[in-house]
Image 1 (tube, rainbow, N blue to C red):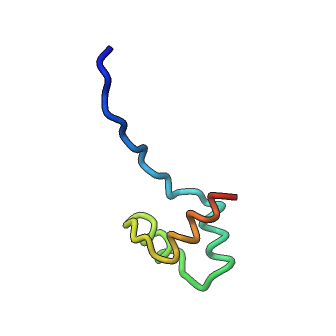
Image 2: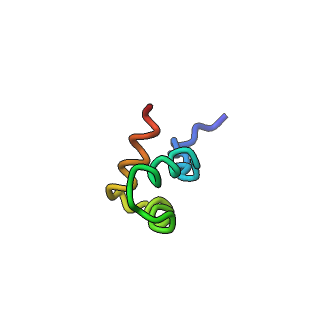
Length: 55
């Protein structure tokens, strides 16, 4: 079997639990949160989302 290079899996930014937690803890509207995640802006919203995944 031929070896293939490693491909990073696409991140999943659809975890409703984490999105709801951001909504509860911040004043960001859902549209802004979803835009940040789908655009991969790596801003404070994305940081919050990623940190919630480390729990």
